[in-house]
Image 1 (tube, rainbow, N blue to C red):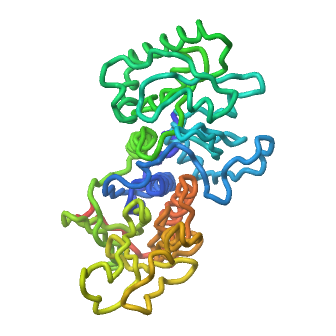
Image 2: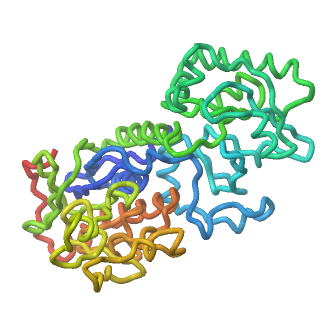
Image 3: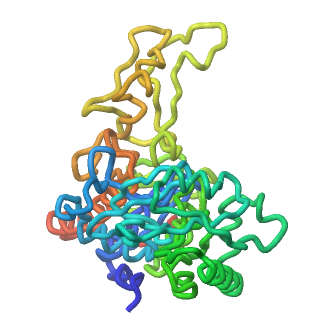
Length: 433
């Protein structure tokens, strides 16, 4: 059985219909978990969000979830069974018991709880005697000799003929990585790596490459088999191939689970006649029994910074209002630190340095979101996940976990309704896709 099959469950005849607004990691987790619980699921995908900017490092948050000591695996946080099932359905991610250490293009070695399978985990390949080769090639932002100096004595540059065409020293990382989705091109690269290993002055335990190992799938495992030595990418800046690999994995997992995807942005949600209605920007309505908002925060576009005083160039606004607003109309409240947002006491608004890093270490920009209970519930049948939640960690695994919690809750709430309202009917609606 494939990993994606574990998330595919045939909905029952009277299956609850769950709408998920957002198709990032939190929305994907909510959709797959709700589907696995027997719900019929529609995902509204409004376009590129913060998950597409993923670098491939998986963490729970700044205060935990990253490996601090290699010899203390028991101290690392674990995913719930539901969240782990989502990660397995996405296929191209690793969550080692001992955590991971990833080399970055900025010259650091970054601890992480897990990683995109294309990245090289140096914990898995290093020992006191192991040396890791760094491919020399003309790629944007890539200098093997400088990186070897920054990463430490275990790393050594090696000459590899990695670029096959004249334009490849200028291609963005994602476009260059896409070329290695082709099996013949990957085989060509493996042959070049074997040649480099044959003439290397010392035995190498692994090879680190610039971001290059596939977009449709993570090709590191195949290259490792072909080259005969562990191979993997260095972690790129946001906007590299890791985010695109997530999008491809997400699409495959949703299709395998039989989840309907509507490629349109929601502009409003409301409760109407006991059902939740999501209205698309093109006017199409989608209605369901429950809804999960997983639109992201300020980076993902779910929340906007819109202070009243920014509207006028030469005049004061007529009223003061909170500096943030939700990107869609919805019956929820924005807040931070467990309470609703304050309205500024001045028409000049809040000083930017009081709500943003680096002037405010615990900044409002990092905390603002929709107020919800610990299970993500904001109202009856309305749930929130990921960075849309107030005070939520802005981290990949935290978003995954909260999405799984919200999706499971949205799918099972109908059981309570059926007990209390035995005559309730789940009639088909013509507005459903």
